[in-house]
Amino acid sequence: NPNIALLKGSYLFPEINLRKKQYLAEHPEASLISLGIGDTTEPIPPSIAQSLADFSLGLGTLDGYSGYGQEQGKHVLREKIAAKIYSHSVQPDEVYVSDGAKCDLGRLQTLFGNDISIAVQDPAYPVYSEGSLIQGVKEIISMPCYPENQFFPDLGSVPRTDLIYFCSPNNPTGAVATKAQLEKLVRFAEANRSIIIFDSAYANYIQDPTIPKSIYEIDGAKKVAIEVGSFSKLAGFTGVRLGWTVIPDELKYDDGTSVKADWHRLTSTIFNGASNIAQAGGCAVLDEKGLKEISSLTQFYLENARIIKETLEGLGHVVFGGVNAPYLWLRFKGQNSWDIFQQFLDKFQIITTPGSGFGRAGDEYIRLTAFGHRKDILEAAARLKKHTNDH
Ligand code: PL4
Image (cartoon, rainbow, N blue to C red; front, side, top):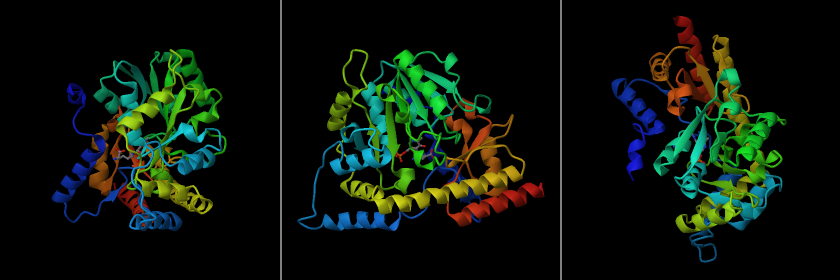
């Protein structure tokens, strides 16, 4: 596939790991704190871990064994996602269980192929544009998002595209789109006959009841939007691997045919379903007990975000995000983001993510994640205070 050659350098996150390893090779005594890659750190809550274990042990018995499942996922889990995540506003057969949001983004890119144009927020999770480059899409339009436009694209200057990728709560800026902003986005997609791919991987961090957790809270969205969700940051399933995609029945191509029918055909053909163990865990996440347990987990990471945000603001930084979102976005005017990354490494021994890895508009920024053990977060806060005051 000659399009692979269009990708620049290595993928962002392995590059950060590489730099971390290089630093440790040169400074073996260093005690690094990672606020870089957005990976969960706290244990999977007890009732959910138990269900994973029970299902796994069951596989070793005649009664408990099961082989291939339906590619679209266990019906009971599709029902639970429709009920608990979407309050029955979507139907179980519109929910497709996956092995994670990233994997489904890749499959959606296969669904739409290369004869399309796309629009992506800048900065954005790299998979939207890099996966599209691999497909060889015709055009990628960037929608800059910065403090001056409240991190919401100026849709008046965005040309029509076939797909629009949108992520809220946003990775990397931590910005959360208001209902009014999402209404604008849906009306824009309707007017342009575009399809929105709405990434709601961090929806559980939204605590403000006025902010939509799903694009389907906006009237008319089922006709123009696909939503990609994940158990990764909801339940600490980054390693277990489980997610879902909602493709509403109402979503049609221009010729009136069903997008869902194609998605069903595509996933049946090139996907063999999410692990049955992970799906058993997903069902436990969405039980009453599981929901209570994961809510504490969400609060824990939000408290981490609050600690870092307050520390940095106390030091005079302007910090974006970190409320209703697990990411903090920090600006250093006029500086290059890999240089800021290096400064944080040298000065504080804290790993961050350079903003330029998410697009050109991220150039003067770094991203900090709120995923971390509390002792590491407190230690990071102490280092920031100590070494900033030292200089
Ligand atoms: C590092 C907006 C993290 N190797 O776990 P998934 O596949 O259900 O969800 C992945 C995902 C989807 N959508 C958004 C995301 O931010 C993520 C995860 N991003 C980050 O630090 O930005 C983990 C990155 C991982 C990766 O490439 O996804």
